[in-house]
Image 1: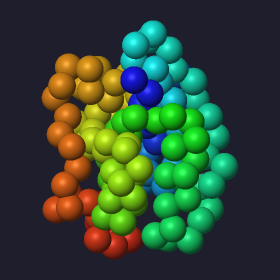
Image 2: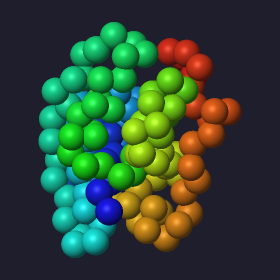
Image 3: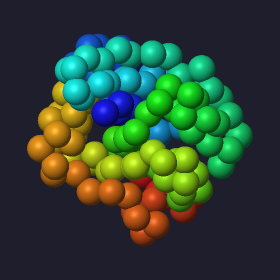
Length: 122
């Protein structure tokens, strides 16, 4: 299963998760079946709010799951419509913790009530 996680830095497994999914400077792309990950730069970091251009990029990578701390309602809906499941990982501070919580099944899928409704939700 291919998982993507927004990050603030390129610090390996201890990389700090970003609070903002679309404008995160980096993403970890992890394959949970072979226990492999790589950190890539977010080339669509600067986009108009609400446009969710990272979603198109994720689909091209074959991503199945997004683990995040916050996401807008439109972005969450677009990802879900593309077949990418979105999970809230607010209990994780870094990449390793997020992956552990996901594989242990302790994260919940994003609902409309959990998604941000504006720029100042977190």
